[in-house]
Image (cartoon, rainbow, N blue to C red; front, side):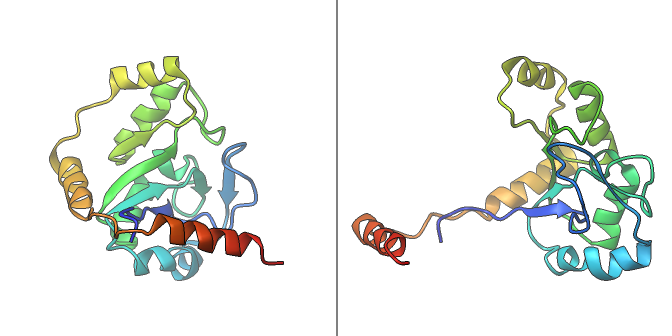
Length: 174
């Protein structure tokens, strides 16, 4: 109603993670059949959404050596096993779950199959370095972006005084 598009995240699953990917790299050792039956299931049910975000997590049954964001095998699982065909973006590339120079992280993400790389910490030098290597959005990735943008709609009208009154009422409840 507010004109905001949903983003399916964190593909291919982060529910079993025991660490915060802002701080460290999570590893999951569950077998592939368990991942498919349980972890991938919510994403499969929502695979028609137009935008998704990767998880910085190692699913050992999919790729024991690389986090999903930089793993071609994980991208195949997202696209083929889960069936997600929308615009696929990384989670914040500057999170501590990923290692190495930011430009190498970004290049590995694009090479794996991510359409977009997100950088969210606001460091201008890092943003400039990433902008300097970012490829043009074209081909299938551009088509996915266009499909996502086509889903936008104008927000429903809102009565600001009524919304503020409702908010104040909610805050005043015990």
